Image 1 (tube, rainbow, N blue to C red):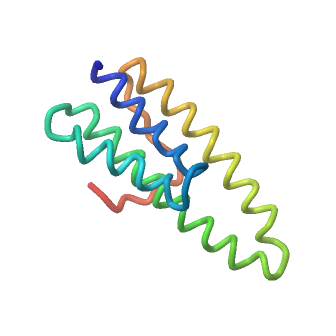
Image 2: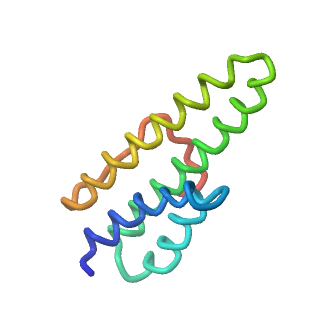
Amino acid sequence: MSNNNWAMVCHLSALAMFVFPLGNVVGPLVVWLLKKDEMPLVDREGKEALNFQITVSIFALVAALLSFILIGIPLLVLIGIVNLVFIVLASLEASNGRPYVYPFNLRFIK
């Protein structure tokens, strides 16, 4: 598989959230750890995907806590939709070899 395909898999692996809890973090982490040393594009995109999914998880946790006062439920839906849209956009850019920078991304891994 090419560098572009592996970079795309870094972003798409976040869809593991539909399989198990925190799959959105574990998926990009596994791909990044496996390929970061041999492919610089995967290293860059993997960090970006992992940072974004950690950020999304934090936002979702806050929204879940706010669901007790009912504002969190629409926020959770919005976070889910935004996450899905950005995963698709990032995957398309990575498949073309272009770097993608997620908006609203906290940089935990540099």
